[in-house]
Image (tube, rainbow, N blue to C red; front, side, top):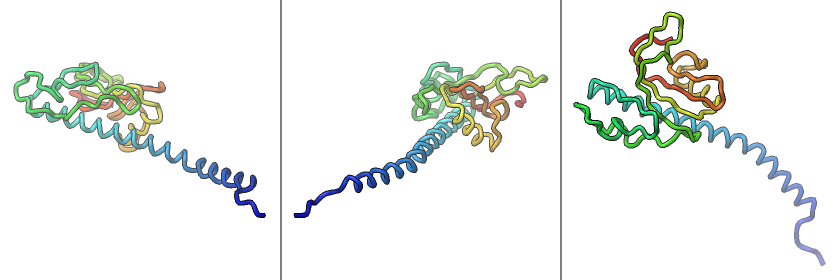
Length: 176
């Protein structure tokens, strides 16, 4: 009488094939997830920039600093400014893709001009917290057109990991 079923060798071969396939597919899946996070972050930043520019176009002033997310006042809800024709965003992004926060800064400073001849000027930018260093570099590369430095262009961050990434919307003076 012949037994129907699989031998131990056949089972081991099938398990080995599955393990090899998993080893090939898993890294690509994680890269795709990270790419999606970066793309979504860039889309959020571009939406915030467009909303800030629209607000300025309508009111002649910039949205005030908002250090705690969500930054709804001015962007989503009225802040009693003459000419406000919002909402400029449907909703403020609740958090970054790495569980950090999007905030808004409108202040006098020198984040985007740090050279010897730099003069403090009003800067408007979106800080994002808790961004991994590799993601910060890719955001920098995409928004600054291939240049990755963290200290020049419209994206600024430090070498810390995770890092805070600052993305420029507008500056009254020169940048470096």
